[in-house]
Length: 327
Ligand code: GYE
Image 1 (spheres, protein in one colour):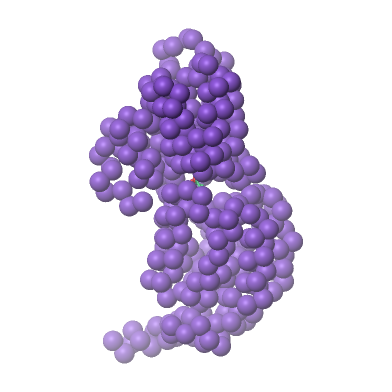
Image 2 (image 1 turned 90 degrees about the vertical axis):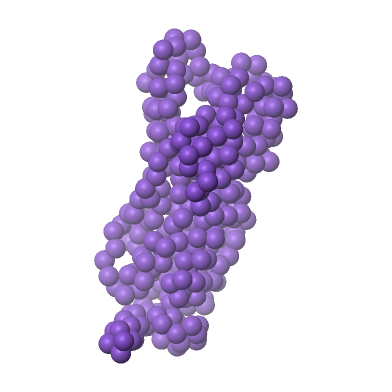
């Protein structure tokens, strides 16, 4: 027991001294809570979807479990709010900053400010497009191109014996965000191999249910013959289902639907037959984020990229998985 306590104290001291060298506030002990006394500033994208709600909970719960003091802010899907939050974390001299960048570009200035202040940064969930990879320690999150490809592969398989044209509408995520860019690109790459697949309309629904519904209503008005909807997340797909039903069509039958995320509401619609296929994207990044943060603060090596493991679900598989779904 004693041994364990002293080992823990040692680990704590090491972490503190490293944090102190790195310009963090760990050495002051001001954040209380004992242990390693790590303070993390976390800038979240917003609260736009079921995925995001589950991700926020995962980060908050795991910070508590890991004894990390979390300063949390919600940017309401605005880059300027995230930049403000990061600057305020730099001013507060937190030990580490983690954030999920709402869009890919425009981060270099603020990330340089963090680097100059010797505060390490971890990217979580979404990537930045900067070539300078010294601006952050690691990027933890899904492979969105792969997710787009999985969506496309299901479609190719589903229509393999048909030669008729397949008219597809696409609801994109937030313009300029990594998941919107990559899910679009991965999907296009796979279906592009066959000329029968035609994307007849593609527009952003900002990852929200309300926008998904609104844009789908417009799609239905201007395109009388839609075979497939590909939505970059469940929430937009669920909004679109309301629009499809409102137009007197049957979702999952008249219009086949593919979405990404596999949150509970999406999985429910999939097992009810209203969605046809969901590509999973896990929001449960909190535990890995806290582990990585501790390692970075201790000065340990961490991989430059940590990819989340994910699967896919058809309607039968959704029925099986629904009762044990965590989010
Ligand atoms: O798919 C969507 C959310 O960045 C992976 O953001 C995340 C995406 C997720 O709004 O539902």
